[in-house]
Each structure stands twice: as C-alpha cells, then as structure tokens.
Length: 396
Image (cartoon, rainbow, N blue to C red; front, side, top):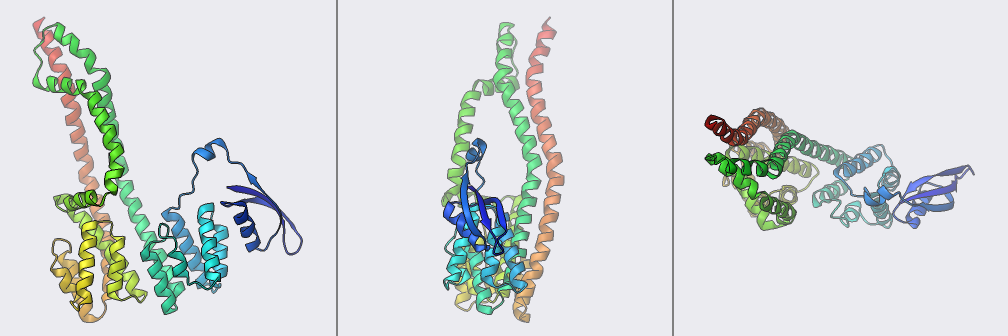
C-alpha cells in the first residue's frame, strides 16, 4: 500500500512524499528509521488496475538487489544495522521492505543475521542462509555477501539466457498450432459436405484431417484439462522424478541437463567451501539447489559416503551416469593437490562457457529443424485439402 506523509527533519525542514508499506504502522516505522518526525500519514487508495494486478511477489532480482546493496555497504564499513536500514529504504516492494525491517529488528535484538533470514525460507533459501552463517562465523560477512551476489547473478543470468533461447521457438510453434486448430474448427468442417455431395473418394490423409476436425472439440477439452493439471502434476514429487529421469535418457538433451546440474553443483560447492563450510555440509546445502530429485538423491548419498571417510572423487566415480569423467578427474586432482575449491571454481567457469556453447549449437540445429517440421505439417494439411479438389477437377 502507498501512504502520503508529512514529516519534519531534525533541522525542522518540512518533507512531503509517498512511501510504500504493508500497514500504516510499518510506514510510520520506516519514516522514523530514516530520522523523520512524522506529522501525518494517510493511505492512498490503489487504482482499479492496481487492485487487480498487485506486484508484491519477491523475485530473484529483488534478492540480488538486496544482497548487492548489503554487500556494498558492509564492505564500505557501514555497521550491519545501518546497512539493513538503508537497504530497506531503497527497496521498492512493500512486502519485501517489511521483511527486511523485521529482519533488522531481530538483528537489533541480538539475533544473528543468518538466523533472522532463516525465518523466511520462502524468500531466502537454506543455501543463502548457510552462506551468511559461514561469513558470520569466519568474520568475513562482507566478502561472503560479495561472492553470494556474484553467484546469484550468474544463476539468474543463466536462467534468463535459457528462457530467452526458448521464447522464439515456442512462439512459432504456438502460432502454427493456433492456425491449424482454427482451420480444423472453422474451415475443414465446411469442406467435408462439399466433397461428400460430389462423391469424391477421400484420400487417407484427408480422412485423417477430417477425423481430427470432427474430434477438435474433444481434443480442445482434453488440452484445456491437461494445461490445468500440468501445474498440479509438476508439483508432485513422483511426477518430477519421472520427467527428470527421462530427460537424462534423451541423447541430445541429456548432456545439456547433466552439464547444467554439474555447473550448479560446482558453483554451489565453490561458494560454500570458500566461505569455510565443511564438504559434508556443503554437499547437503548444494543438494537443495539442484532442481532435479534424481541428482538430489545422488548428492545426498555421496554426502553420507564422504561423512564415513570415502574420498569425494571416489564417491563420484561410482556414479558415471550422473557425473562426467572430466568432472571426476578435476575433483580427484583437486583433492590430491589440496586445491579442491580452486578446481571447482575453474570447472564452474568452464561449464558455464560449455553450456552457452551447447545452447548456441542447439538453436542452430533446432531452428532449421523446426522450420522443416512446420513445413511438413502445413504441407500435410494443404495436401489433404487439395487432393480431393484435384480429383473433382479431373472428373469434370
């Protein structure tokens, strides 16, 4: 919610402006936290569209902005409480600003920052809070925040690159499917009686198209039900495991997903180990970051083996389906030389470049392949319509 306020500074200067907060009390507290003496605070009623489309969801970009701002202030020597207050004022979203203010209050009351952050697991992941905890224990909170910001920015950039690469193909496929579906509902049903009246022998492809046109309503209903059920099914752990397991079996896609998961794992382990976390704890926190239940199970099993004294590289080598020989060899070399952290960093940088190369390669192959498939589909429908017309003309 937005509030219009009138306040005075310590020197008596009048200030009038607008502040965003979830409640009037929070607005008052925010104004007081920046040294203003509040005269009045009045709520500004949101517009009709503002009620329908409120933008209060805390995104990855919000988390990155918070971490980067906090990192800059702490590294500049600003005390943590002042840094949190300043970051809270800069935050645009009222919901997130209130969370930061509550975290600030908890820290002011003597609670460690990591524990205050862990009260909001939907906003700050266990990976995030454990990184902060390591920085607090080692006394390098500023450096930890800086490396955490770099990690989050790399993750966000990679997701953006992947989504951006898929937008164009999905738009083309959606447009073609819409056109074909439109023809199946409005065009083909009108052609069928004409051919039947003239006694034209329908080719097989025409019969298939007319069958699809007759069943279009049923197909449409099933499609709508499928789209409604997709979010529910994808949230189920069993469904996720089926999809993720099958992705690893597809020849062209499996290598890309494997490289992606290993990149995330190496980035996470590097960040956590460099912050001072033990390998066992680093593996446990990294498992939560991997968005694949199959890999998550394997990493947690590796964690238990490492806990019992099994070398990390040996535990990896017993799972060749999930971890590439190159990754295993680098980890083995890092363990022998005592430079596992640096080795993981190098692999992270290498895998990021490899993923970018694979995305470019995929697009170069996929785009012409997509054009060919669309041409074949359109050609099939055109042939289904033209062949009966050709037979009609030849009879005349």
